[in-house]
Image (cartoon, rainbow, N blue to C red; front, side, top):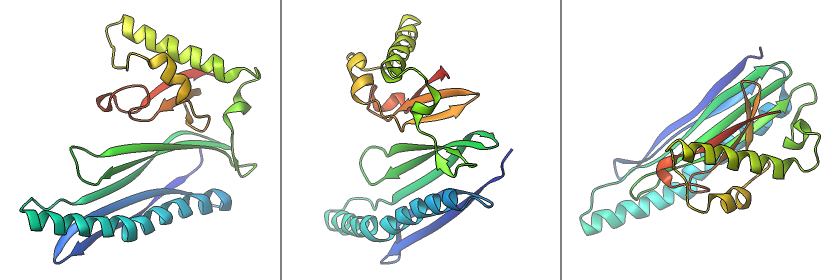
Length: 205
């Protein structure tokens, strides 16, 4: 097993004596894996910069608007968390969930995933796990089959046109390995309402 260390960038930003933006950004680091480390450090510091510039300016404008109109003060919140799903030398697979609350009824979460071959110091493309050149259409058929099974069991949490949406919103980078299986995931709203969350589908390699 490879030691994956989680590091954190964290800060509360204030304006006129009030905290208007909070961020906590986890990012993974692995000893002696420079490319992996640089990639993830840059992702984390890019998000940190966005928090301290663009989003902070938006939060200040919202603060002024709310004060002027007698509305409650709202605090922007950005939380990025790392979940390691597979860790057997030389393969490490993980996903990062980035939650943002910038006003409105609720926040939103965006997931990104990485699967690395540390011997090669590169991320593994989804196509590497499948010999069949038509693997994408096969995966979508498998996913639609799993959805139909869930519906048959009374667990219908999807949009009515999910069959079209699973194809339209399929992204080859949206996968991670867990328990030796490929997990294909869809973002919030891709194939189901917000309340359904981020949905993933395990598929044997």
